[in-house]
Image (cartoon, rainbow, N blue to C red; front, side):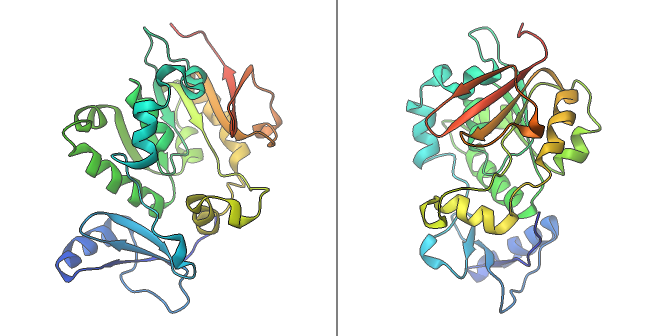
Length: 256
């Protein structure tokens, strides 16, 4: 994973004290360099990431209350979604899930909205800071705040290192490692373009599967682009496909 200099700044002087707290928490500088490609900005509304050399891309931030994520929660198909089937959601089963590659938290949020208790691991401090900010705002929402607080939990750590220390910790471990896109960059939605240039591809993703299989009691689910090979070249027990992706499911035991 690449390492880049990213400063956190306030767009309003009244937010400077908050910025300094965030900088200390996530170990980020408070001053940008002239050649920086990215900047974290704290506004009165949210924490957001800007790609300085491509301002037309706009800000990347975590928002569980509006937009595509909210639409998916309300109209995405509920437990009929492929991701719900992949993790083994049933009318009587709400498995505990460890999302070891949380990113912007969208899949974790969907699973939590369907009843799962989800622990999210994210190793990038930038992405974890964005996710933590989005979580904090969601927890304050009168409609969804109660179950977000109960079911969604974030830990900033290296999943490979942390998973290697866990045995049978969660029923399901969910993996969605960053994968190189075949399409030209202009065709990739802005979040993925920013993420690819920010953290690069997860070149160590193959190492996730063995430790994930050790940590999961029921199954490991790997989200992959349709054209991608199996993680660690290990064929799954079964597959579920959607328009954009597939889910490789490694079953260890039946869902109770």
